Length: 480
Image (cartoon, rainbow, N blue to C red; front, side):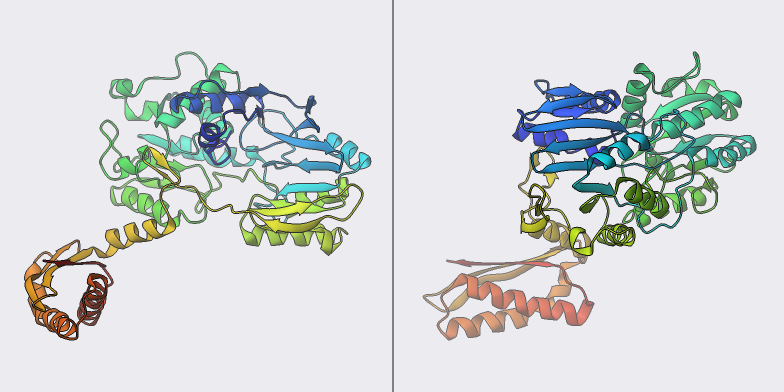
C-alpha cells in the first residue's frame, strides 16, 4: 500500500484497464482511493488474504502474511508448469509486531520443502548486518519526545505508515493532545485505515485543521506529510512560513519519524535548516532512535535462504549495491553463483521446468515521465533542457540575413532570461557575432542552420570565458 508500490497503478490501468489487480484489503482500499482521484472506476480489483490460494489462468497463486511498515502486506508464491516462484514483496521479520501479524515463516518453510525454483527477495537492507530492530524499540524515544515537548508538536512520517501513526496517536492520547492530520494523502490514507480497523483512534481525539486555534499548543499533535522534504508538502510549507494555518517557532518540536531515502538528502536538510532557523527543535533518526526500517537486514535474509533453500535467487527491490549484497548472501548460504541473478529492471529470465535458469534478454524499462496531464511525452533530453533553463538561464540571438546581398539585414538582437539582468553586457560580443556571420555569408554560406551553429559557438565561447556558465543558447537566423 505504500506510494512507491501503488503510485504507478492508475497510469498502468489507464493504458490497460483489463489487467486484474490482486491485493489485500488495506492495499486495495488505498489503491481504490487513488483510482478515484484519477477518475478510474471500471477496474478489476480482487481482494485476497494470507493463506488464500487462487487460480489465475496457468498460474496458481498462494499468499503469505509478511511483516512490514504497513499492515496487511503479502508475499506471493506463483506455481507454474516451469516451477514455483516466491516473491516476498517488502518484508522484515519483526518478532514483536505492533499488529501481532508475523511473517509466515512456517508457510515459507512448507513451501521450501515443496521446492522453490526461483526466490525473488527484498534487497533494500541486504548490506545492513544483523537483524532489523522491532517497531516497539523506538517507543522509549518517542515517549521522551512527547514528555519533553512543552508547546506545539509536529510529527512527519510517510502518509501510509499506519504503524507509526498508531504509535504517535497512542502517545497523543496518553499526553492529552488532540490530533490533526495535515496533508491530503495523510488524511486520505488514515481515514481509510481507520474505517477498515487498521488504525485505532479513540473518540474525540481527532480535530479538524481549522479547529487548531481553539486549543493551546501543548494540547495539539500535528501529524504531517513531508518527511522527505517534498517541496509542496505541509512540512516544507511550514518551514518556509508558507502554510496558511500552521506556524512553527521557538519552543516547538518537529519529529521526523522516517528514514532518509537516498537522493532526498538536500531536500530534507533544507527543511531541517529552515525549521532550525525558526528556533524549532528538530528530532530525527540522526539524533534519536525514532525510526526503524521496514525491510529485512542481512541476518533475516540469511535465515530465509537457509529456511527455503531455493534453486535460484533473483534479488529485487533495491539499488544495484543492494542487489549485489543480497546476491552474496544467497551464495554464502550455498546457492550456486551461476543461479543467482543480481540483474536490473528489464532483464528477462528463462526458468525452464527442472532446468537451470538463465538471462536471455533485456526489455526497455526506461522511465515514463508524468508531466501535468500528459505522460510519456517528456524525454530525458527535454528534462536536461529544463534543468539548464532553471539553473543557467537562456540567451536568444535573433538575426535576419539576406543571402542575395550577403549582408545582415537586422540584428543580432540578444536577450537573456535568468542569466543577467542587463542585456547591454552583450554589446561586447555583438561585433564578434557580426564578423562571424558576415564572413560566412561572404564565403557563400546559404544555410540558416549552419549560421545558427556559428552563432551558438561564438556566444557560447564568450559566455564561458567571461562567466564560466553554460546557459541554453537559442540562435535564430531568418532569411529575408
